[in-house]
Image (cartoon, rainbow, N blue to C red):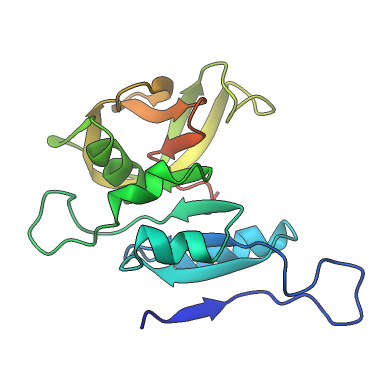
Length: 190
C-alpha cells in the first residue's frame, strides 16, 4: 500500500470544506521540493496530499483529486529504475501540472521528447512567457528557479510551447483541451 501524507486537514469547526474536500494530489517523484510543493498548495488554502508515484491511475481516480502536480526529481526519465507514473493518469481528465522532472515525464509519456542537451540550468533564470492559460495573470518576463540537466526538446502531441529561457527553448507547455501543463522551472521555490 502506498503511503499518503495528508498535508492539510480543515479544522472541524471552520467554514472551510470538510474532509470530503477533493484534494490536489502532489505526486512525489523523488525531488527535494516535493514537500514544499504541497506546502505551497496549502498556503493557497487548498487541501493537498503527497502521494507515491507508484499509485495506479485507478488508485488516483479513486481519491477524486481536483488536480495533480507531478513533482521534480533528480533522475533522467530514460534512466533504468527512474521514478515513473502510470501514463493512464493523463487520460483521467484531471488537470495536471508537471514540474521539472514531472514535466519531462509528461512530455515523454504524451509523445514529446526529452534529452540531455549538454546545457544545464541551476539557480535563477530569466523566463519569457507567451500568452497562455498558465501565465495569463503573470508578467511575460519573470525570474524563475531552474534545476535540471535534461530538457524537453519536443513538446507533447497537441501541446503548445508557452515559455522559454535563454538555455531552455521549451521551458513550459500546455494542452488546454486536456488541461495538461508542464513547467521546467520550480514555481514553488521563487
